[in-house]
Length: 326
Ligand SMILES: Nc1ncnc2c1ncn2[C@@H]1O[C@H](COP(=O)(O)OP(=O)(O)OP(=O)(O)O)[C@@H](O)[C@H]1O
Ligand SMILES: [Mg+2]
Image (cartoon, rainbow, N blue to C red; front, side, top):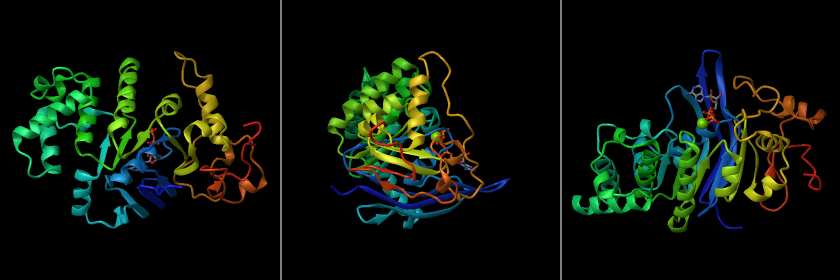
């Protein structure tokens, strides 16, 4: 078993809300392996973006109770000062957001945005060299006429083009860890396919790890190596993507897959019956028990930890889907 690049242990996050303290992440343990793409899936509100935000420590102010460890190469990111963390963000960590318009500063041209990141990463780099590199980066993410595009402002570009620019900016950091939070959700299907192709192509030259958050299991199956399934601020299943999707062990993963299978291409998205857990409620039993078709007595009285389910796989379930019929 190779060593993880990122080791997350006991990651918890809470938020003060009008209804009381909400449990956003309820103690996550996760290994992100080097050079691999980890897909993170789960219904809306399961905590995917919150996990991403913790990995880069980009958290809104009302969040409290950030605890646990996120370790990369022996450094616990949660123990760093804001200043040290900022240095990490410009050199080792990068993020691609769902909506590039909110992440790209509208006041600067694409060239300035890119050369700023490049010169922060490589302090000795001249402006001219930075511009050459920026142009090469734009070309590498499939932007034609790259030199001319350097002079464009974000609003002058199409949505797909802006997302390519954001990917170029993230790549210019040459990060060890690249976190992409639903990077294709705001795009139409054709552009989405192009961006997924782009990720697939980039992985040949990119030596870091990628965390790819998505609602779309088909897309994750196509692109990712490993899978992490989240539910109600917990991780319920992990493992190699092909094996988990072919034979899920957690009933929640099974239900997610069934929804995707039952959803027609143009029909409304099918959803799992029942309600997502209330984040304000403490967890005293299996968090999926109220919606679980396999629920048993023990599921209503104890919290299942992630348990080994065969090589490289875990699931937090007392009554996992049997392997044979999975
Ligand atoms: N700053 C905040 N203050 C209060 N609650 C928050 C905050 N940020 C997130 N939450 C809550 O935490 C839970 C997890 O949210 P998060 O955005 O991480 O989910 P998600 O899995 O990314 O969902 P989606 O698929 O809709 O993007 C939700 O219940 C959300 O309402
Ligand atoms: Mg989200």
